[in-house]
Length: 143
Ligand code: HEM
Image (cartoon, rainbow, N blue to C red; front, side, top):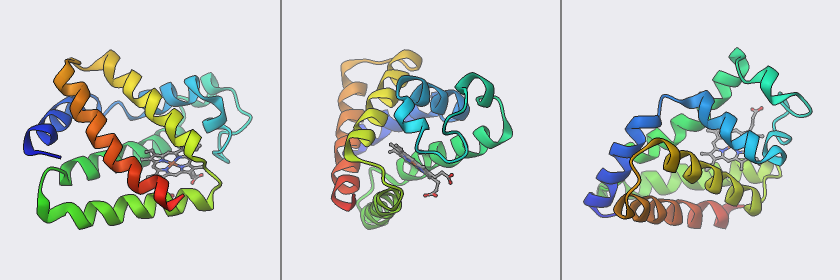
């Protein structure tokens, strides 16, 4: 990512990064097959789990991963650290039977969430697209 793109991603992410449970709720709501992969939430009514402590904990883990990677992005010196984090994410999810199609669903839901909650101009959209393309190239290779 260029420094400009990284800044656009960072500043838009800052608006939503503390909406952890809300983001995971939006993902599960749009894609119940993703919820079904989580042992703690599989088969449960989303409305009844969304306000629980367990839901908040999982949401924070997932959303914090983005915060960690985004904080490192845009600097050449951090490229290999980012690569290693994302590659490990892919390997860990492969072990859980998560598919490339489900990662695609997750991306669609995340972008829809961002579109609805941050100011979403063409430049912001392009920066996120580039960031997610880069991230997903590494994740999908590990799956
Ligand atoms: C756990 C991040 C996509 C299913 C986790 C954890 C993180 C994470 C940080 C906890 C740490 C770990 O145990 O590895 C992400 C990110 C994603 C993503 C950043 C997208 C870019 C998905 C998708 C699925 C999924 C698409 C399922 C279809 C799971 C499951 C767990 C998990 C089942 C384990 C939950 C448990 O401990 O009970 N994810 N994830 N993830 N993720 Fe993801």
